[in-house]
Image (cartoon, rainbow, N blue to C red; front, side):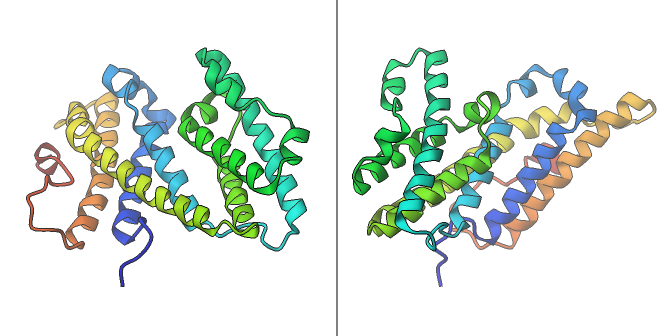
Amino acid sequence: MHSPFAMNNSNKNKRNSFLKIRDAFKDADNAALINGVNALKKATYLGKVVELDTLARREIEPLVGLAQGKASLKRAMCEDALLLAGALRALAGDLGDGELREQVDVTLSDLASRRDRDCADYCEMIAEKAESQQEKLVADYGITAEQLDKFAALVEAFDAVIGKPKSAISRRKKIAEAIKVTIKEIDAFLNDTLDELLMVFRERLTDTPAKKARRAFFDIYTEARRIDDAAASRTPVAPAPQKAATSKSLATA
């Protein structure tokens, strides 16, 4: 039976591979190595992996709050919406985006007093705006990925309570599609950019501490990429020619 979830076993293995590479990039011991290569410093890889990780959690996250009364669920959703709206207004101010600032200009009393469907629609808009600006909100505006996950689940739960199941189904379909797109983007970046950039750390001789550190970083990356390759080899693919998960340069390292 075809799984309705984008995070099937193959993509779960890919995610694990991506997270291992992320951890290597975030390791303080590798900071000097990464900072020495401008193209690596400018890479958007970490942000994309954060995006995928959040989407993967949201896809399998059960509805929350269904045991709550509708009024308390609505209140919780509105309070979280207000928090995100404030962060989005601050971001809009920094970006000079007057339209965004106006869209998220709301008070708790105003939002909570709206009819259920109007309130749900507005909170869905807040969720979409926050998701589109997730990387900036998490990095610079005090919002966590967990807060975004919780709010998305609250909105989905409230939709279900007030009889908007199609909205919840539509959102999950959007999440599944976003996961597929994000994985494709990460794969392309690894294949076309990182696999080639990391070759600068492939030291044949490790006769100095610096060379050992460079080779260790390269080996961690290569091992993570092999997890991805192993997953791909167990997954049937269409006969159309596709680029291998790992570049030829890494394969011969």
